[in-house]
Image (tube, rainbow, N blue to C red; front, side):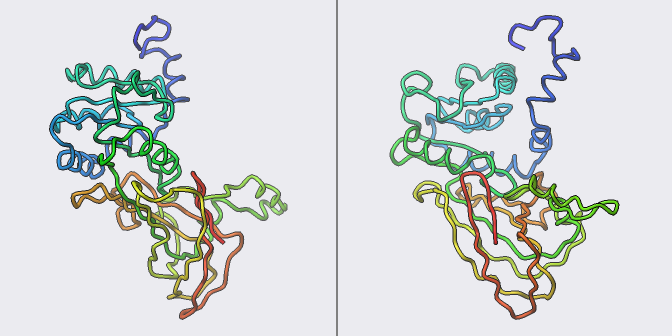
Amino acid sequence: MARPRESLSPHSAAFAAIAARTVPRWHFAMLNDTERNDALIVALERRIPAGAHVLDIGTGTGLLAMAAARAGAGRVVTCEENPLLAEIARQIIAEHGMSDVISVVNKRSTHLVMGTDLERPVDVLISEIVDCGLIGEGLLPTMRHARTHLLAPGGVLIPGAARVYGQLIHSEVADGLNRVGNAGGFDVSLMNTASTRGHFPVRLHTWPHEILSAPVELLDFDLLADPLEAGSRVIPVPVTAGGPATALVAWFELDLGSGVVLRNSPDNVGSHWMQALIPFDKPVPVSPGDRLDVELRWTDYTLSAR
């Protein structure tokens, strides 16, 4: 895109094939999620001091970097590891006349070099790298590194906190998205060795299901102060309805500060984010009034439960 040959012009079949393999389709749904966009932009307007030095991690199209500049940032560095997206962002930023304020760096944030990519530790650090279960895009290791090596002491971190909630469900159909026994009269359960071991996205309202508990808080992260390491905890879940519990369905609340919160709860059907299904190894019979102790485990990228 920077120096296009005709055979690889943005209108060519070859370019379309490259783009399909390298740019996830969810970018389009994300950019059309007005609730997400508006919440992030309002948070930036409220929290960026005039003239601040800002780092945006995971630029995509450069949307948040441009919003930061419009909110009064004096200098914005935005990094993106995908080279095609980095060039798209660079050209969009240039089209908006913001190249004098915003620099696009084609690197992961963990590879940024102080004094080269960044003049100094930044006053404000922005990063919206969350999946349906909050941590699947590497929010925890990214924040561990960034707050220590890239953010100035006393700097602003957006988001500053996040929580994960969940509830027990029974859904044979949703369970069948990641588990199989018989198909066409044949035992094909060996396929389960290739099933997803952690959480994966579902849009809960599209699948038949029964809710077996009220929502409970699963995790609570202070992204500026907590260790943000892998761990586990046992969570007592009061059961409100009977049936075999097949999974936890989980969602996040992202605290952007100044009263702005983003969430992908099952009732927020307009969010581009789906919910996270955290399957159990096998269905667990429960009855109203029971308490099911669920061991939740998390790594840098996955949620799992038993």
